[in-house]
Length: 260
Image (cartoon, rainbow, N blue to C red; front, side, top):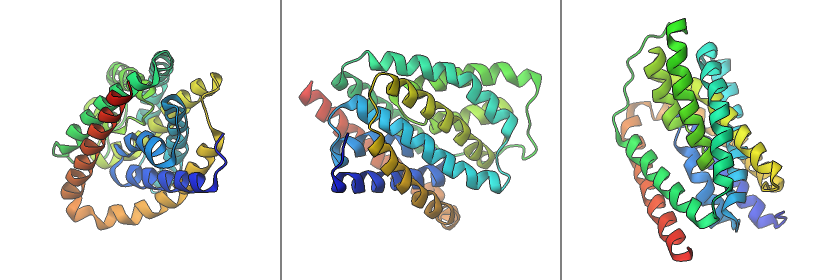
C-alpha cells in the first residue's frame, strides 16, 4: 500500500482531473486514470493501477451522478437496464484481464485509448427526444449493448462512457445530454464490479482509491460550471481532449512495448 504523502497528493490530483473530465464530457476521462497512476503517481503493477482506477472512477462517477440527478437529467429506467445487463459483462471482462501479464494488458489498453480518442473526434449529435423512455422493444438493444460495453469496461478498467452514451442514444432515442447524465449510472456500476473483482485477488490499493475519491469531489464540483462555460466551444474542447488521449495512447504503447 502506498503511504508516501507526495504520491497520495498526486493520486488526489489525478482523481480530480478524471472526475472533472467525466463531468464535462460524460465519457473518455477515465481512460487517463491508469496512465496517471502508472506514470505520475508511480504505481508499479498495471493490474493494481487498473483496479484502483476502476474503483476511483466508480466513486467519482457517483459524485457526478448526484449532480445530474439533482438537475433531473438522468433517465433512470434506461440507465438501470443498461447497467444491469452490463454488470455481467464487466465481471467477465475483468476476470479475463486479471489472467494477462501487466505489459500485455497495457498494450491492449493503449489500443483502447486510441479507439476512445478516435471516437471523440467524431462530431457529437445532439438530436433526440427529451421525453424518451424505455419500452419492451428497447430492452433487447439495451441488453446487448450493455453486456458488450460492460465487458470492454471490465477488461480495460475504464468507465466506458464513450461507448455507453452512443449505446443509450441508439437504443432509446434520448438526447445526448440525457445520455451523458444517464451514462454515469453504468460508469459507476462497471467500475464497482471491476474493482471488487480485482479486490478479491488482492489487487487494490485502497489508499490510492481514497485519495482519488477525495480529489474527485473537487473535480466534479469544478466540472459542472466548466461544462456550462464550454457549451459554445464544446466541439473544439472535445477535439483537443481527443488529441491528448491519442498522444497518451502512443506513450503507453511505447512504454509497454519497451518493457515487454
